Length: 170
Image (cartoon, rainbow, N blue to C red; front, side, top):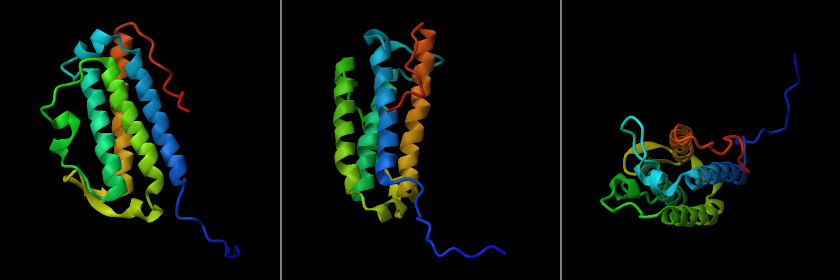
């Protein structure tokens, strides 16, 4: 029979700093997908009735912005207050989408380090609809971005444009 170890095992697999790095790596890759789109195709091209990549980027921007606020403060915006569910028009240019993206990136970098470790296990109703632990909401934000970035890859390839390598995340 093996001896019982007296060493305690930490309750986390990765640190919050590592998780932030992972999330921001995905965000940097998605930003490169936005950059790869020709200006006109970003706002007009779709396949099979799916939304344009400009619309998807706006969804990702709104979710990340509202998500980091909710994760950091416990004050979650309602789903209809997010950019992709509002009546606000899409930005008119790729540069505007990238500027919004960069503002949210800096907000994430500022707020994420302030989140106490135990906060990730608080159970809340994210965006007024999705009840669960805060870490699950964060993982959803990352998963949703990967999903929509995959749509962007399909769009780019169908336009004859080689997308950035999916594994190339800093």
